[in-house]
Length: 494
Image (cartoon, rainbow, N blue to C red; front, top):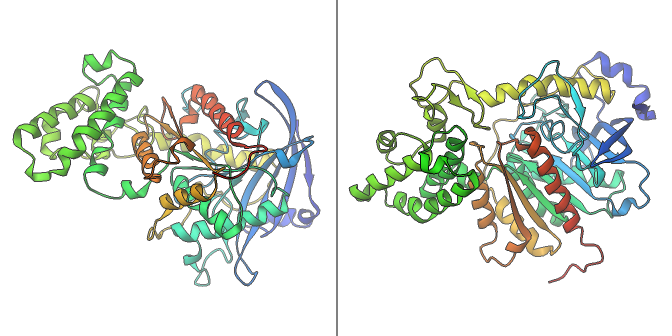
């Protein structure tokens, strides 16, 4: 059951919202709901609306759409943590984790994450709303968020569409949000998925040094570290092998000696081979001895399920797209998904270097698109003709001067309270789990803060929470992380 409350700021605008493709730059609608989470039943408030992005002259230059959930009847709101949630892209709305992971409602999907008709939402019994208030933020041009004006030469794209611009304006926006909602005393956590991992690494320092807002935790879900992903070289070329092992194991494409073991038994073996043998071999490039090259190709075929001849033909450097296209070519002719390699696709022809389409993403869009539009308009009563951008126009995106990995290190060094958790799916072929581990290892070269990092892996893909078993486990991991890092009555000192 829900009760709808429209604040006075909205009363005169509600009709106009429904009749045009423009939104008020500053508006909010509030509804009341009940949830049963972790066995406890309680009421909560959903607040969804828009809040301006201000420029240096206090002029609104954009308006961000957000949805904010708070548990009712909390005696000590200062002790209640705030979880700030972003998705990635760049250009992706904050719909994925909102309606499938941490929020009080999730998609109607089957236990493995495949869409089920009729589309809609259902209760999420595993949401972390029982222990934390949650805000889902849509960056500019995603969701209902837009620049002011929405388009034209007047829009200064340099203020929004790049790694550092994105971090700067979002940090400023969060300052306003925290002030408006009286959350300055609360322990604060930021969570980002995919490109959102890059975003929250940078935000950790920007919030501290530009907004004087100190965090207790940073959570990176299937993080994209572009210092590896967009570069060539031995590390970037070798580091996908453990993911190949995981995906091939799922599809029963490995040699019997590996296939007979559990996934978590064989991954450490593949990881060790990658670090100890494959990276040094690739570092030798064309000067690698022929005998050693043959031996490396044998082992890569052993750990990947690919054909040794194909591996040699590509000089031991296997693009992930080639893997998705060719892993099952001789077995059943299917392609495997990029973001979640459990998904299968059918191409026009068997031969090729990459699949015709992303089988997993097309599957997800079946259910996410109708669900978020239904949910915001009909359950949260946010009526508008503005199109909800699951993926918005943010390109070209400025990737220059990416110092986010070191930003996180510096934020942690300055803030003894700050802890980091990484969550990855073993079958994610876009931002692989071993890449995420490598990022974690590289943040702090001194190793003096490694006890403040933790890694959690799951038997699913990029959005590991779509699999029902992992939905519970991953939310429990966030819940435990928050409880462990609240740091009540502990001084912030080394």
